[in-house]
Amino acid sequence: MEKALHLHEVLYVSTLSPDAPVKVVSQIAVKARIANEAAGITGLLVFDGMRFCQQIEGPRKEVLALIERIRLDPRHVNVEILH
Image 1 (spheres, helix red, strand yellow):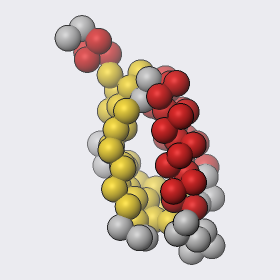
Image 2 (cartoon, rainbow, N blue to C red):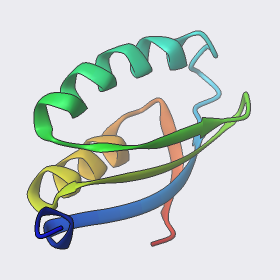
Image 3 (tube, rainbow, N blue to C red):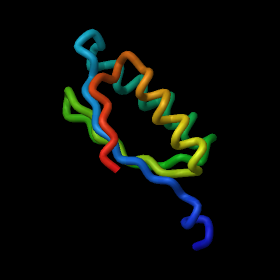
């Protein structure tokens, strides 16, 4: 229970860049699973063919670093933090 108190949660939405093919999403997911597990990050990703909605949680420092990488990733546009 104590560990849950230290989780930081972020919910964001973004759009796949028009320059990025849809198949890149599966490539992102494979790499993200490995990196996120190593960083103690978990969550849920929904992709509708054009838009992402993702909830991520984990240690604050790692979650904030991940969000910054997503913001800088040219495959994501219109990144908006909802929570």
